[in-house]
Length: 202
Image (cartoon, rainbow, N blue to C red; front, side, top):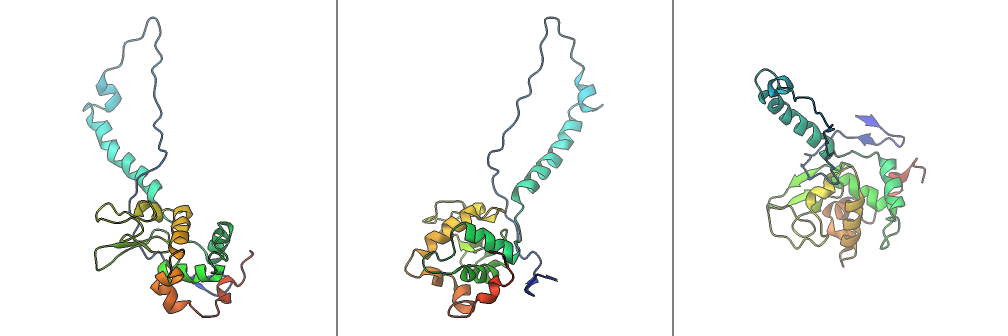
């Protein structure tokens, strides 16, 4: 394991990356140029190989796999990188919780891994960098949920933290605040957390 400037170990990827639907995937339209005297089209065997369409058919799974891999990749944030991102999003001081509380929470919930999915005993899943649970906050498409944050759980697994931050803000508006997260209660609440921001340029 490598260490950052403050001596924190950067853990390996801990979670499983769930597949999620790709957004804004545009499919280019291929238009054939048509002239007044079009040339005869080549036979399909020339385009697809000697066995006709089988050559193109073999390429489809590989193309699909490449596409999905590029879509679902999560990210393991560095400690200071995460602090900068959360501060820019307005979490520092939000509902009375300082930035170091959020960094402490994210570390103990996911080790800063946006793609982590934890399958709970009750059949629900905890998702993303803040391990937001599908029982109340997001829709996992498999179990009924109030879906209070109005999003699919897979939206919490990308390298972007926009959905995670928006939902986390909604969670801390509840009476329990950050106490909703057991990891925060057990590891962060009431402690000196200044070391979580040590060395970060904020």
